[in-house]
Amino acid sequence: MPINKASLLVLESFVRQREGKGGRKLRLIFLGPPGSGKGTQASRLSQRFGIPQISTGDILREAVANKTEMGIKAKESMDNGELVSDDVIIGIICDRIVQTDCENGFILDGFPRTIVQAESFDKMIGEKNIPIDIVLSLDVSEEMVVRRLCGRTVCKECKTNYHLEFNPPKKKGVCSNCGGKLYHRPDDEEDVVRRRLKIYKETTEPLIGYYQQKGLLSVIDGTNEIENIFKQLVGVLEGI
Image (cartoon, rainbow, N blue to C red; front, side, top):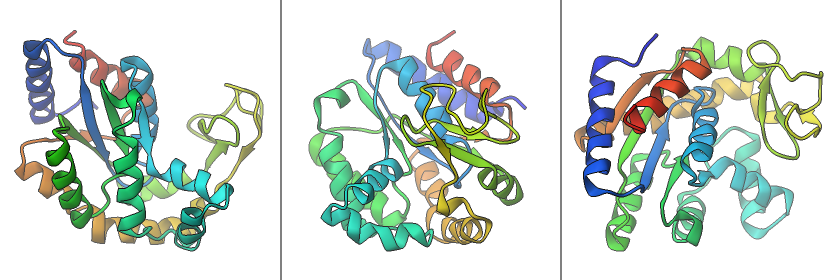
């Protein structure tokens, strides 16, 4: 399915504003339930536009693996598919977006997750004069999310995502990108996925209305083919 007309108009307006300013800065937020495809699209857009993809999930998992103080605090919540505390998340983001590789923009993947986080983040970026240009929300049904996540595997080395049905690697169990070993994340088990979706509906879904009121939101059908969604986004963002 193509991007709906309202979303297309929002994106076209965004591109015209960027072109009119003559800049290449792109600061965006990806919203959507777990398994909606926001991580995949964020990664590809990061490569295309040369700006970092900031995934709080990856940052937290790295902290857990390194057994840092923050990682220890986050581990129990992550293993149960629950939200990590706001002070940990916002602290990570605050330090990250002021680094030199974010000067031309960034893509936030998985943050904010609550209205409270969004309000705190808005205050922070207002003080630092770092505005968000657009918020993309990928719309996917609950059953599609369960189907996607329960078949997902991830490379231990480069973090590339695969799927046994939708996006299998060339060789079973081996990353086609770097040759690393693929694994099934504990939080992709069905019972955990269902709990994650319940939390999303209760705490994160209200952000759709929050950003819509700010005139930043563009809702996109996340059930389309990965390549088609990406091509449509890039085509609009580059003014093609």
